[in-house]
Image 1 (cartoon, rainbow, N blue to C red):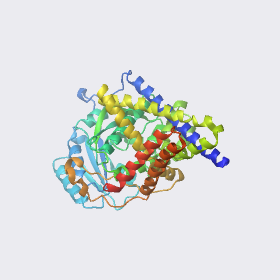
Image 2 (spheres, one colour):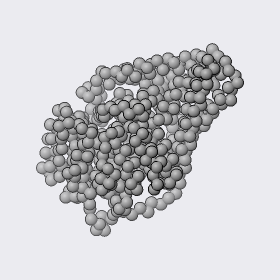
Image 3 (spheres, helix red, strand yellow):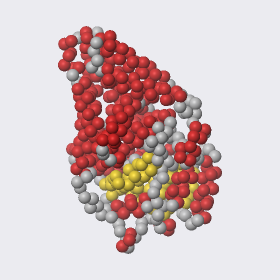
Image 4 (cartoon, helix red, strand yellow):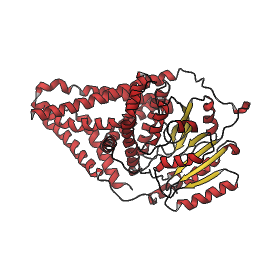
Length: 493
């Protein structure tokens, strides 16, 4: 019993310490973010008005069964304000459904109106998105490659706002911030927007402003074609090919330019099954990239110590769900160990580090929330509600994301599962008839139901033992897992 108690306490304490150091790194990014606001951007830019030549740009649109959003995407791309003789559009269509016919008709319409647009299809999905991008790159005319996923709707002047930054020949990527077309659709879309906003402000600016490694976010950005080729081209051995190529490029000393002030609107997953598949892909891909690229970062002789630290922690982002899950599972046995072995009293104070971490996140996310939505008492009150909702539901996703992380670290390969796009704006309530939705239920859902009961038992145990030190944590975990479990059962898949 004593040996088991030691093991539980060690896992509990180590998990809290790892989360704490991650929180310190996030707070350091906040300080970097605040410093960046005092900096003046003197980056060199092309001046097309004064006669700088327009470079040829290829826009790549990777598609896979996107019949509900493909027309919205193509029409927004067709309206891009850029010289038509300098613009090529590649529709990289791996679709296996009837959307192919509609896409062909739309492409024919745009081609007749003078747009250089090509429909590139493949007989298989070899390499998934990375494979499609790589195949399109082989015949791309452009010096620069802009990429948009199917759920994005770039503004007309998007290329005119991004391409000028490539005047610096060392710039390999220009990335823009994601906006959200359906931010306020539901609690689920609100917390996704909340988390993504933090990434696209705090993290991307915090890293980029100090020349630390950032990542191309898979869409709403532009690559210099020479950078892609120099970094080894697209590879499909991870589920986040964008993060992988980003690190390989920066290890080759290419610079990335992040533009916080340009928001490119996109649609957030509005049903929990879509959010689950996206979270699984991102977190597993992050773990795969840690296994693939962490050693390269540490062994690099061309980057500084702080960049190495932030790079490794960036690659470890998804692994924090593993630490959170272990801490949460161990926290209930800890209550009983605390009663039986009072000599370990000092170890229970480590919970204070988790509280500090939560406060650091609260401060950091408020600064980034305020940068988008503004300050004031009313916004702050809304922020408090949204923060605790986000924090609670993020805990509810920790088991699902832990499975993804472990699969990534263990090297288990899986198919690239696309996130269903619904076009809620266009379909209104009819999106529930989406043909890409199924009634399949993941086995993980039932374990999440068990975890809801497990943490309810933790609340009961606190009453039984008269020890309420972990009650608020267990309440958040119970609600978080309850939300994920119930939504996963009742919502369309």
